[in-house]
Image (cartoon, rainbow over all chains, first blue to last red; front, side, top):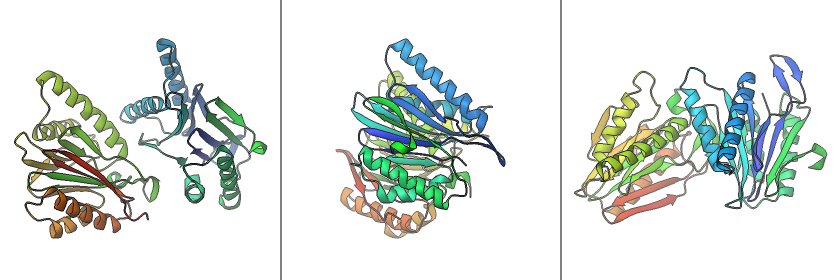
Length: 197
Length: 204
């Protein structure tokens, strides 16, 4: 029951995750950051089984960092996404599968373009212009399908994110208190407050 | 709904006169929700052998990666490219290795052999080979594809007629299947080379 979605333009990706942690009918926490920084220009948002999310993202973060240290070079977003998919796919058919849904967002400095990868807990992967996981998708894909254009600007994407919030507020059973909003572009990753949209 | 229907797909291969064709839809979904409308399900193995992987999307990716590794090893060891028939047996063995925990795909292989003769073959998820002289179908729209291919296919079609036949068969089949569609890609393999065309379909 998380809110997790992202929108990619030509040279940026904007990603949104809610900050709530729920356990059954209890609200355990309302300031959890569900994103995980992998390198200066790549990060991922994670949802799924509570223990698996932090375990898997810390494992990936460690190994992506290890690669950059060993090779004095960061992995590109596509390399990062393919590495993550491989690890998740191996885990899927092992004795300890991880139940995590991921959105990998990054800016490829070499190619000069942004990339967004959708990966589900079965480790099916797709490079997409916009994406969402879980129940939110049933509401947000409709909004994003209608409003998205391939040449969308960051301001356009911010307005679209606001519209997504509006739909969640009016039609979704859960009232998400707060969101982590992150943008990655050629200058790196930065976090936005909701009033900065 | 079985795991084979989770992501949705429709793939068909047809034999013609000194040419073969393989076509696939582009949808990736999670049951009824469409996630991606440009998902690759047909992959080149050599210049004249293609494999289509209808079924669970995670296994489509995993298997293609493993095929690529095995075909490259074959190329280095044997110093020649793999024949479509040899490749089908490789695929069949790789699937049967996982007999009691299978990959959820039904591969379809289309290619021209070293004598330029068409070769098409399909198999089930544990690698039982199915050779055909006419056409092979797979995916969530396979029932519809059987009907379309049965009525449209005829022997000895040239590359252009084969393209028209396979495209119409696929488009008509996916229009009556909710889990596949959103455009298609068609590869026509001829001795002179491969012609790849993207075709638009109903986007609903």
